[in-house]
Image (cartoon, rainbow, N blue to C red; front, side):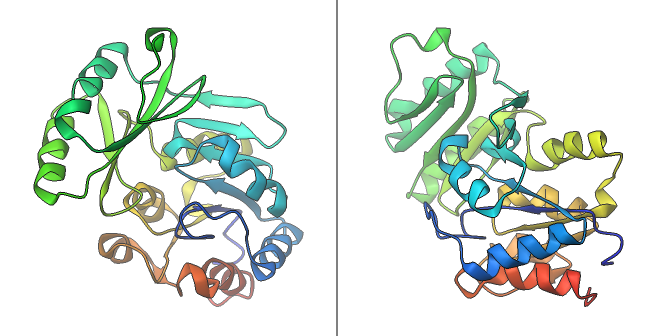
Length: 247
């Protein structure tokens, strides 16, 4: 397995850091350096926006970031390689749910991140991702059914209480495939590490899928290996095991 893996894809929140966290551990930094020395590429694959994931990517000295659940792919130098936007008609359908859901929401366009507000000129934006954090389980299930019925949308989550929406076919696995194609690699040569439903497609399709000890149950079921929690350096442990030939 060690010789086969040529790319490691790492989620951020709940995998490398706590949700919203900004500082990675020295052990993880060393593990990423060791991977690169063995000619294994490392990429960040997150639901976050580029602005909040770039500092971690720079600390780890990785070259590429998959952001917004695959909605964008960037180099750390700031070159946009891929952007996948939600159709304007679908944007209107999502917006019409704001008042009914009455929950915290956020939305991301080519012009930035907006939290619980819709800019007046929203029609001039290219919308990439919407998110809702809905604590009421029944309301969350109703919202999931509504959005799932729109065939041109892709639904996932980064925590048990939220719903994250991209255009259909937009996910971390698909974005990784774009990077693999440029490297003449395939998914059997990927180790993917994550904790939430927005990680599950890359984990189940990877040559070796790793779920964090704090991962959602369904993610653990799809993984080849369950490592320790994010606050126990579980991602670093997985990289170390892979490099030492224990997988």
